[in-house]
Amino acid sequence: MVDIQVSGHDQITLIQVHGRIDSMTANQLGEALTREIDGGNIHVVLDLSSVDYMSSAGLREIVTALKKAKRAAGDVRLAQPSDRVREVLEMAGLDTIFRIFSSQSDAMGSF
Image (cartoon, rainbow, N blue to C red; front, side, top):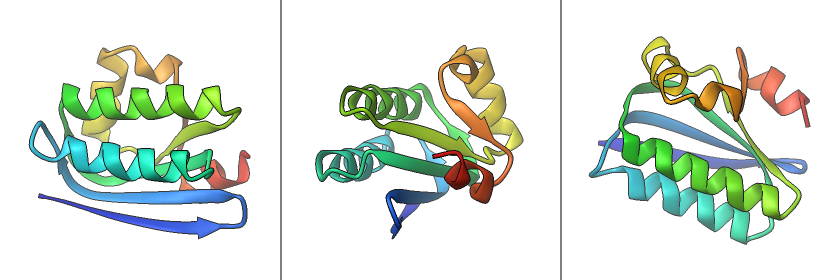
């Protein structure tokens, strides 16, 4: 089960995710990201502090969103991933591709 909350803050879209991102829920995250980026909200902060598990399907969705945002001169930045999610990002080498911040405010202030 996953809960996704989207809110706008000036030119930045904050997407807060709660729960597990696995093969059953990754498409919900992907749809939320795509909807925002396709709608012109290309500066995205993805708050992963309440995500306790992320599968390769979830990683694929956030990488797809990053590529889409970059093509539109935007970016997807990650805020406070849980230790478990950070470990998965590092194992996949994605910690070198995404800008990862220790707090939501730091990530939002980086734009």
